Image (spheres, rainbow, N blue to C red):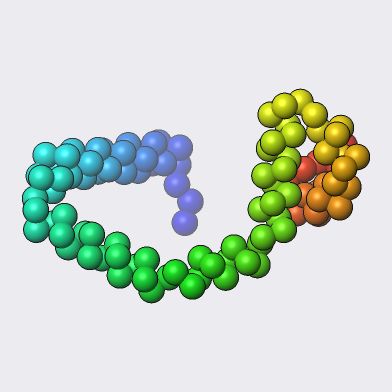
Length: 105
């Protein structure tokens, strides 16, 4: 099903209004409701306990990529990418293979 540009704008406007109403309602009512806060904290705590292992597995699986990306940010913020390319050519290759860095950089 395809939408015309006017329909898309209308749908987006309605969505933005709905999100604004929900945020406003939270700020006025839910934020100060003690019972809601307790339930929300309990739900968050249960979610954390349930998914703790998943986060750890995801980190372990992507550990090398995360470290390479952090090195890239460190060297790029200091305008020393050439030093990184000399010291860590394997990390540069990893970033290029994952599409986080262009081969011409």
